[in-house]
Length: 142
Ligand SMILES: NC(=O)c1ccc[n+]([C@@H]2O[C@H](COP(=O)([O-])OP(=O)(O)OC[C@H]3O[C@@H](n4cnc5c(N)ncnc54)[C@H](OP(=O)(O)O)[C@@H]3O)[C@@H](O)[C@H]2O)c1
Image (cartoon, rainbow, N blue to C red; front, side):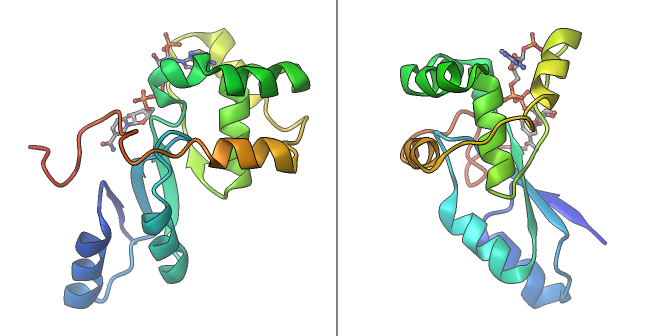
């Protein structure tokens, strides 16, 4: 069993065609500002689990977004918790990074509330083709 990272659809297709091996998981940049819908659809079609890297947008603008802040206030949660719940609700694996014990605890504590349809619609609507924070796998020198 293998896992891959930063594979785009052509990379996955080539792997499938040339080896017959379907990876168990593909770890890709994914957060509400960059939702990777076509890649996720390809994953779903082939039974590949999607793992989100930079799931809370590297702790930057995403966590200060006024629209997410309003959802957070409604549920008495933090914006990080709202975003992590969104990943969970969408069947995505999200492993946020923090060096602070309190934040690590906070990031786990997302199972005592639910996003409603309005929250989900708002979060789904934040997708932006220009929303990538990290390197583009097509051009990055890994
Ligand atoms: N495969 C790849 O190419 C690739 C690329 C990038 C990242 N990754 C992996 O993805 C994982 C996470 O990605 P990432 O570190 O880029 O971004 P991230 O998890 O979205 O964000 C991490 C940042 O958010 C802050 N943070 C964490 N929890 C917070 C909270 N509750 N409230 C406010 N700020 C919070 C952290 O600061 P503090 O630490 O100071 O709390 C850190 O600066 C890592 O394990 C990394 O290895 C993989």
